[in-house]
Length: 311
Image (cartoon, rainbow, N blue to C red):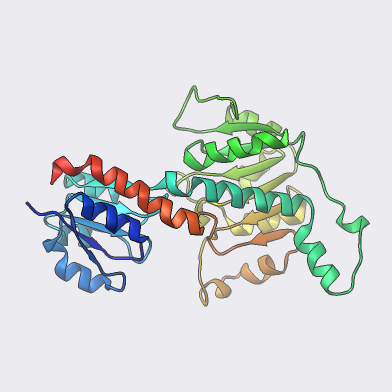
C-alpha cells in the first residue's frame, strides 16, 4: 500500500506532522522543480502544493499512482481539477484556513479607503495638514454587496455585523442562504443597492473578466470596489475608467490581472493604477497571515484523514 506524499512547496510543518501520525510517509521537498516532480511523481500517492506550478495534465499523467492532490490555499485554479477527478484523484484545498485572514484584510482596506488613511498618512509625512480634504465616510448605514457567499464571503459578512452596515449577498450557485449576517439578493438588487462591492468568487471561465465596462454600467450608485479573490475576475482598465467617470469612488485590490514584477510594471495600466490615490494595492496577501499559514495545513490534514480509506 503506497502512502507516500510529495510536499512540493512550502507548507506549514503541521501538515507533515499530522500526515505522519496517520501513517503517511512525507517527502518534504519545497525546492523541487516541475521537471523533477514529473520525474519522480509515479512513486507517490499524493502531492501537496501551494502556487509554485500548475498541476496540469502533464503532471497528473506523471502521477500514475496519485490518489490525492492537496492544494494549500483557498482556490483550485492552478489545479486541473476536472481532469484529476476523471482519473479518480481526489482534490482537497483549505479555504476554511484563510477565511478569517481574507475577511480582516478586506475590512482593513475598506476602512482605510473610507477614511482616506493612505492619502492622509502620506500627506502628513510630507508636511501637509489637510483635515477637510481627508474627511471620511462612516461604514454604518452603507450597503455592502458580497459577490460569492462561500467561506470568505460568509466570514466577511460575519465580521461586518458589528459595523451596523446592511450586508447583501449574491451567489449564482446557491439559493436559500440568507442568515443572520447577510440577506440573499438577486444581481438586480445588487446593482440597485450596493455602496460597496466585494468579490469572493473563484476564477472560472464564467468569472474571468466579470467586472468590465458593461458590468459597471448597470450600477445605480457610485461604488467602492474591493477584490481579494482572483485578479482576473476584474478588468483593471475598466476600474481605472470607473474611477475617472465616477462609477467607482475608490478601489482596494489585493489581486491583479497579472502579478509579480517585472511583468506587472510592463502592463499598460500599471503606472496609472499605482499613481491613483483612490486605490490601495497589496501583493496578494489577504489570505496569507502567520495564522492562516498554519490553519490551512491543519485543514488539509483533517481532510486527508477522511480520505485514508482510499490508500
